[in-house]
Length: 42
Length: 272
Image (cartoon, rainbow over all chains, first blue to last red; front, top):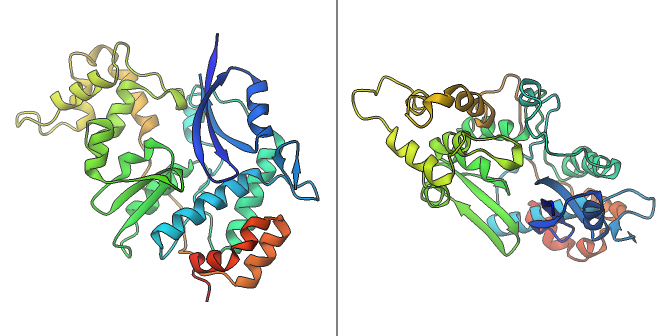
């Protein structure tokens, strides 16, 4: 399975890298949880 | 106001990134008490992307809400807080940071706040990098810290990245060279007397492991090296904002938790 490593800035000010399945769905899920995507790679 | 988890104002303005950035910024400023803060942003028309389309090529474009949120932060919020955002056309934020950190003789110590280890190449006796993860998890990296992170000196970090590559920027390294080999090549390529007239980059390019891929190494090196002397890069120190303006801003953004601790925020920003 293809994964992506996403750097997220959460609304609380925390920045972290999270591993998620590759795809737009994962990015939308982060936005839904009040996160801003700063960058990502495979 | 919360709609489907994404933070927006009641007028529908996306503010998730702005809130995250301010929470991070206030936490760092409260802990370190800076005289001045200079935010740097992408200047657009990045020369690295023009040179090779592959650079940061794995990144998909952001959604519209991201750009609205970002421009709110850069054009409204930070100027209201007394901070002048630096953008230099054709260059990345990292280049502007490199320029400012190398051209600020008035300051005894400079901290670069980032979550990107690329900037560790800028560390000197005067410049330190504050690697930020959260208010409770931040690391101030000095020269010894860079050696601990990469195994090489700050001025050699660019060689390390050009050799081992950088997945997040989509820079492929030299085939069969990983982190350990990169450090070994750099150590073996330090000046030894007879080759002192060569630059560090040339000595590495002549290393037997790198020589067959010297052109790739030098092209990578150009991409990962931060530009320290930008043309037309003007920047100004920040000044304490007017408390009333900060309060109006936080009210407009509907950041109620921040409004509850506004006195502490005014203090952090140096308001009089």
